[in-house]
Length: 372
Image (cartoon, rainbow, N blue to C red; front, side, top):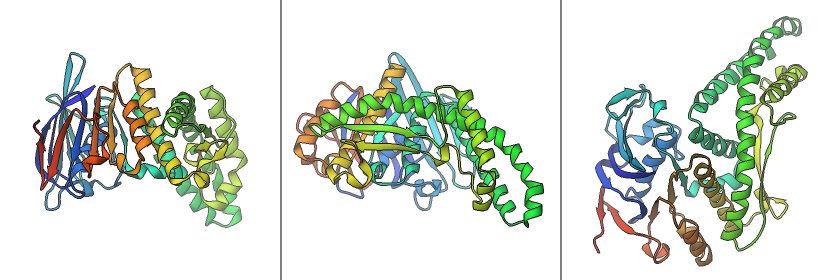
């Protein structure tokens, strides 16, 4: 898969910009604050319908504008597709697939992209919610229907936790009498949670080999490992996971009421990262953390390529500035043969010689292809 055209209207800092793109490696260069990251963020947003930089759509809309529009044309072999997404803060977003009006969720799976961004250092150093998100975004790119499962699970857990908080505020007798209401939510929480956990377990197993391989090549040695740490006993059987969740909820009923929170399920779990047998969080150096975070994204790329037989778009946002020369050259070798790679760089010299097929300069709200 590769992009052939990208057009933005009032997206972030770009009032009106369009770019023709080709397979291979394209680098967007220019000083910080000129909108390089905004370009590749728009591509990643089409793939995931979320931003790694903000949870609020309002931040994606240029100041003074009512909405932002992302338009793209994609090629997959001999097939082509066009997509358009209107981001309308405070209202429902609008989408087009070709000329047909569709729900925005219908765009999932049309554009596939894996983005490494500077914020990904938090995958190693930060809390488990970021690593859970990595697995869930990968799952949705492979199976777009999982987006609804994730959204439904989030709603059920919020409603169940709200009930737990209400019960916690009641006198003991009333609490006992009304605690049976929780059983109404246990079933859907366990069923949806089991579906999510099963996918995470499968993807962790698929990621383990590529992450170890990419880390070893980036860091010239060292052993990286990933392990999914569930909140209940699990197997590869979804029904068994669902049963374990039901049992755990029943056993933890009083503790959950006392704490006003659901204590078991995929929202409480972690993807544990290790380097040379030690927890990466707290032990990894800055360079090791960068290499491991990059290996996680490259591993995600490899899983999509293997399962779908098609390359997602690979985005490397300001990655080379943080890598030493050895890691830069190693990364150059790793992206060789990828159908389309979009790179951003503030300093052209940071990008290894021979990596880029074409350059674009980003400055003053304009994107200009360098000739020659």
